[in-house]
Image (cartoon, rainbow, N blue to C red):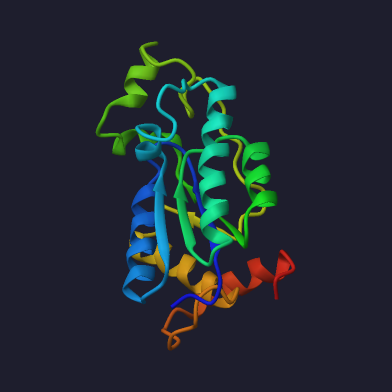
Length: 200
């Protein structure tokens, strides 16, 4: 059971692994009996944001819509897990201002590795000019400056990334802490990051 609602916002390049890590965090929270919902950017575009293009204005509107749902969930004690490219810092900061206990998770991945993982061939299509304003090819990605959690998915496994997110949520008092494991190095990294941000 969670102690309070929160918005856990996963951002990163297309095919960086953010949705995979987000789903793993969702499952771990669900298995603990937490009130949790998953808002995946690709799925949201098929429902809540159908009809929006990939222009900057429409990307910002998509983030705004996801953020609004997260706001409703988190203020009512639910942990909202959101996974969206959300390439613009200003859009993410707007969601941070408007939601309860915003935790930003940057799932970082170099473009060449993300492109290798891209089973849908979106990067290749963008390079051929078939997709306009594709983040990482012909549209910018503004990486978070000070995210609460940093995951390098080119070096860290899904398990490692999910553990870092869960441990951060425990340290922030969003969920009760479980017994400590044997990840002293990562524990120190998380503590340093949260201390630098003024949480502890």
